[in-house]
Length: 148
Image (cartoon, rainbow, N blue to C red; front, side, top):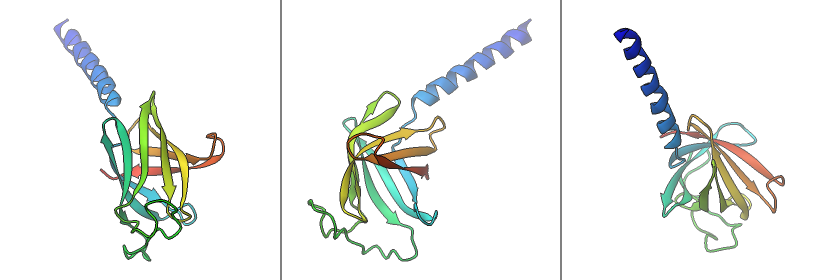
């Protein structure tokens, strides 16, 4: 009887531990983006949280052609002609249920700013990042993979 009780207690502890861990998942950390056209790793993006809002900064370029000197010449805001490495490309995202939304994301390739939402998978290892115009149906998603 003691063995059964011990086993049951251990199972309940493990089950509740997983629930607590799942609730603590956050997109804060380092993420690898994948190039849409080539399928190769493109960059490392660091997501930070400040006062409940997420922002994403380009930490490193991973393409062979990336020397770290690339600038956002097509940007139309304060980021125009600034280096892409070190640039904040997403900001203003707030937790809304099981996703983050209400923010914006910049595509440094074309200088356009899109509305943005992010959704972390249940393992915390992949992040779906969707940039869109107007409604979420009019947009494009990328899957980012957690590095740390």
